Length: 235
Image (cartoon, rainbow, N blue to C red; front, side, top):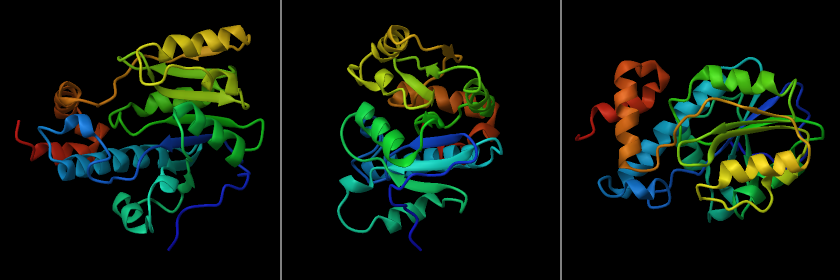
């Protein structure tokens, strides 16, 4: 069964939530966690992140669920890797293309969605992100041009757009602590109305993994597959 779609315009009847992620290839995901994890362990952990994130998004009745993967970057048939994620049939898969994050998000918006679409982008690095944050982001786009969720490292864990406001994705110093502030500045320069969500965190290093482990001990339901994997981790 082939999951991934051609990049034809999607006729979405509802707002869309797009998970922008990588296929779980050892040595290409969560590399800052190696060590202490091995590349294979990091790939398994990232698969758990993906599964929890997909389940959370697919469970929302207020939005259509998509996952945009780095299919074009990989050689050969990605089906075996897609199967490890165990995607529900309701989740549509698209190719995110190449380039920096801004180029990838711009490509997804212009190639896959008709204007004016309401599209929320998230990553797979925040598996315990509260469902209520996603619900607020979707509803916020009924009243705002842009919704954004700042992450602790100065970037953002979520950005949503009503229409293809590509200006907020251009000339950003990606992978730096300036991403969030620069994005706000781009939006302000264009006169866009922005809603800022509460802050959250990405799990990119061992400190972030420890924080996630502590939080999931209190609420395993926030990311059950990740919780199960971390229960066997050598702390």
